[in-house]
Image 1 (cartoon, one colour):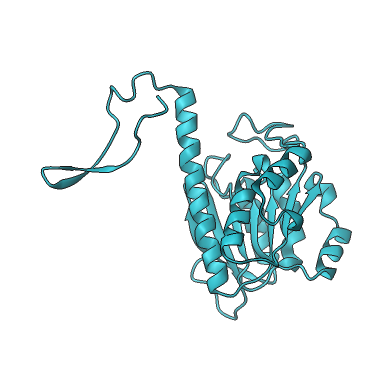
Image 2: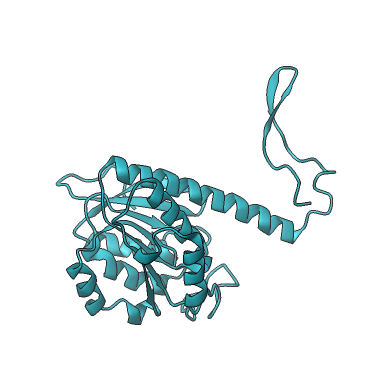
Length: 255
């Protein structure tokens, strides 16, 4: 079942046809296969985003650090490390903000049953073991442990700013509205022209509503920020990135 071909182009009468698995190919297909299929597609889309966004950062001379809020399994974090290395970002620091104890207890209902207290847990030891195994910029990875309402402090802000930290890419992958609110409050002083904010769950968990979840938190934050934000890339069906900028004119497209 895992060898079922899911995409390709072949020729029929010298015309291109998309290969589609037929009934025989999908005999026995079930929930487990569906989950693996979706996950492969989603992570392929996400990696394409990292490939493109590091090209964007390098081409536009946007230097700074990588912030990731929500580091489950170290999957997207490794994508950032790899593409940073490919693009010669040798001075970049990589901040991993996570409770390393899974999600907090949701305050607001979601459409995702598994988003409960303790779900999506990757321990700090497991995370760092994965980083070391990846072997890229290991000494530049800085984990910040704790739930965001207590770990994202003014003291931490001041310490990072005193070290010259500015954000070039911010990955907000924290699922819940109540988790995202302190994230956006925290990142404001690290923004610069060209900072990319990737909302991994812009349309996930709340039936696509922009008035719930991470997107709600971003839409509340954006008018208060000293920066404006233009929508940049769609990542699969679930994510969207924005670029921060300053201007006396309105953006053509906002959150």
